[in-house]
Length: 81
Image 1 (cartoon, rainbow, N blue to C red):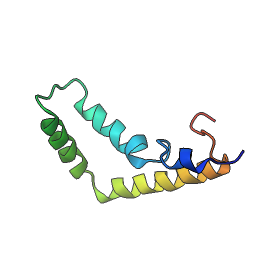
Image 2: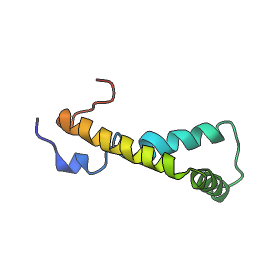
Image 3: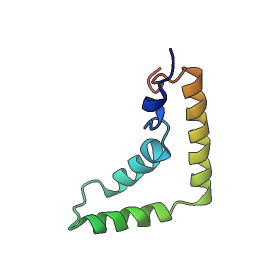
Image 4: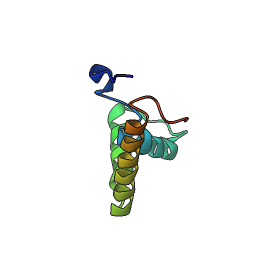
């Protein structure tokens, strides 16, 4: 299989915000209602700002691991394999 560069420019399997950050933020704000988009952005930014150095290191390590898996599967979807 040849990897189509145009399709691989953005892959949610490899974007830290998609595989780690967003799920954690979403779980913390689940069920809450916000009066505006700026309020949601501010709340999300506050949550992310509380993550410590160990969290960032772990997220980076997950990111590297996911890239290695993507390479091992020749760019195919690998999450469920």
